[in-house]
Image (tube, one colour):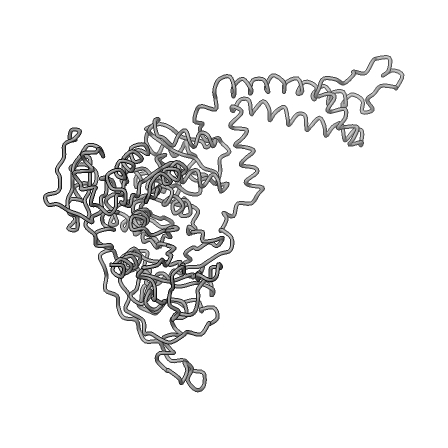
Length: 639
């Protein structure tokens, strides 16, 4: 670790560059995004050149310089030429440190674009108002939906004006899809996936046939359609997102009906396709209300009572119900039975007098067994009062609310979240909000997420014992999924393998940074998924640094698609472009358009020749390179 105020400034003066502050996994991915897809000069400010991902960052060919300072001080900002930089990304450190650095950077360069990571999103929104050109993003909030959805075995969704975009695979693809987003999917070899393949956009087949047959129409005499020409093999790119060859241009395209679902893959080709679809309502987890109510009641009982108290209460309740049944059987009057049972529970019933019994005028009509039932109810009623007092003392007097609690014996069909860092806390909170039972595991008693999940009443298994023992305490045998999201790949993989050993049917979702690690993971385990927080979050940070608004990310296995909303402003390079211009180079699909004169968003707008004008808005699904290309076009045209 270097001392405060000491560092290595860039060898040569630099300007119009972008600064990334941090040496973690997110900083590594972000630098890759900037140098490979946006092709801009990058200066990296790290705390220690020998730790975390700093050595790998320093080896990247597109990095102009790596500067080492213990913290983001005034001197450190001057060393990375903050006065001439175009953008600053703060992706490491606490919320307070990032706020201080962002405000200091703005004082040095009022026009600089600042993107900073914030766990507290509400605070980040307020800080944005203090900055002239800034954006607060949360890497954990960006990635958490993908982990939560993967745990439930469904794709995550992105909301756009009341509609929800999601990725469907193979048999789940419906005929009203927006576009095909991937093909050649082979789960044993993730490198063969093609994102946004050529001639797979909406109505692309109609465009190809119209270009081939011209005025003669796409249908030959007899209604026989020609066989489509085989697609050319793609040329792999560095990030395994090949650029598509341009489609043949055509005139205005007729508004066609729903595009047929893609059929099975040709023989000899890798199987699997994925398509972008839109729903009017967000897909919900299919948990019936009876099961959810049962879990809530059991969980509430476990929160307020210990095992011994629950045994006493359940025994007393069973005795009361049995005695109530005896009273009703003997008298056959339900209303009177309820009345006398309540009086007995309160200790207010009057006993029969011997003289009344001898004269046959006693209150009871059921004889000996009625009196036995009333005695049982009265004794149980007396028991409830001290038990209720004990519960109140335990909860309020002993501070039980302030302690993490272990999962109870009735925990079933739950998701185990391993690691309560930023991501784990977000995942556990989201699953809990959806009504899914959650149990957390954490080895560090000082982890910041413990207090957050404790406030929600989520059980937490604490301790640093073997995973086998900890998972048994988390009731692995009865769980539906395990999500391992600690900051260490080896720890996450160990938790997943131990979980699969203890419960072969459990679904495992693992946070892994290394792509090779993830490939071996997919080949070894079935009913499993792997996600990378930095891989999901870095494209959004890079786009925000370039002034683009990314509404969300969608996972296609280990790959990511960006859903971005772009506004055509005066002087923008997007003016005059049509859908052919935007989509033909590959990596981009226009999925919705809002014209300046109309306020309604039009999904899958069919006219591919209409040119964009100032005030128009488009929503695109794009790869990382595709979104970077749109940004490059705009910058070149403005220059």
